Length: 170
Image 1 (tube, rainbow, N blue to C red):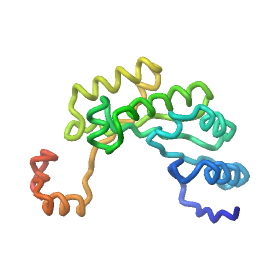
Image 2: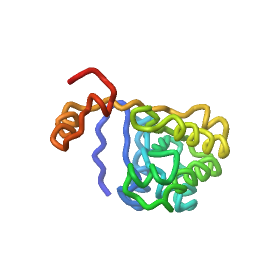
Image 3: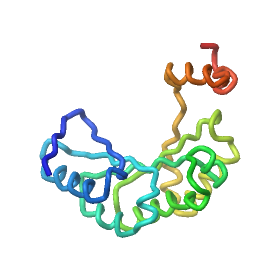
């Protein structure tokens, strides 16, 4: 397969592009001397459902995985993602799999209190701590910075962004 990779300083891709395609891409990245680090961003669903998938990517040293968690409890997970509650555990399984196969990774979550209540944030961190204290301590906590188009869409759908984000008026 022929890949055209542009140099932008960092490289990110979701593993949902397809397992075979991702492995081919990672092989190409390993061959490229100009690429020092490739960030593979994932919600963890695929890596949580297959230890073998994680084992397969563990051979690539230029890869760093960023697991982006969406919620700290099943109902919020379903509400924010539209996925079934049973899938809630998969991102946490992914973290365990990444640890098991010694893959470079870190965990991120949208813990902005305007999106995730403090009790849910606490549950999320506790769940991470049960897996690994270092992972929990190094959680990348994201804050929502809405795009102007998001503000416009919220107005169209009748949601007041000032109340929602508890911010200054737009």
